[in-house]
Image (cartoon, rainbow over all chains, first blue to last red; front, side):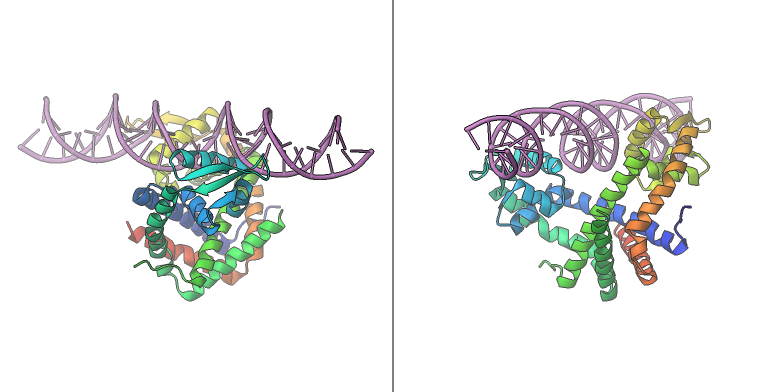
Length: 150
Length: 150
DNA sequence: TGAACTTCGATGACGTGTCAACTATTCCGG
DNA sequence: CCGGAATAGTTGACACGTCATCGAAGTTCA
């Protein structure tokens, strides 16, 4: 007995899917064109600057909520472009640190303002305060359910 | 002069990003595990069943809001798995039709109920009617701005 | 008619994400 | 101290998405 979505839910769900896809695509394209960074690069660099630029790989994966293999692959690509370096970890020889390079720092500092501006333009400049709070509430609720679902 | 996000906006934005990433990942994994279909396969199959199972490629791309090359690549993969077929187009010899195979129809019919159930469980069962309407409203607003931004 | 232009769709190259398997190290019970 | 389990991180194979480009077919207009 499938409980299909009713009309109101369907409107919300289809709208959400479309918004999500379009927003993602626009922001990604713009970031890439403006700064040569991908969305993923951006997230990694933000997480690194948040954390004093020297973090264990798994801690970073945790912060980003990424799978470790994804992060590992991505770090390799970023390293090849000079955005981050890897450092050996003395405490635990299995482990590794990720370090922001000066070039990585420069990249994120250059990219951030235009990115925020794009987020504002596409999303927040069109929403009133109630909508912003509603969005935050919805996100919290859904994240709670996801966590609960294991 | 960058207008950074204020606290309320930041809470909404970070929440949205996290929700989006988690929701996407969960639904995708579940769909894949239950039915062997990817999220993208699912979207294509839904669009095909919506449209009587025989559609021009560009019309399908339009409906999905996908780039034509993405669709072309994806159709090749789906064709290899027997979910769709391509047919020549008599009217316009450049063109091609996409056709749902019986196996494709079976796949979508089998996958849909569990997928809706997952959407319900992770999202709608936790939201009240006001939140559902708020989400629809937000999506409409943002999609409007995206369209306006060209 | 035919030359320039546009449109349909496919393709190759490349960056990205996932899964499963692997290596090297550390931890822990006996 | 030893041997098995757990942990940190990497790797390879493969599916996916984007961009630039291409060939074939249609359109336009002198």
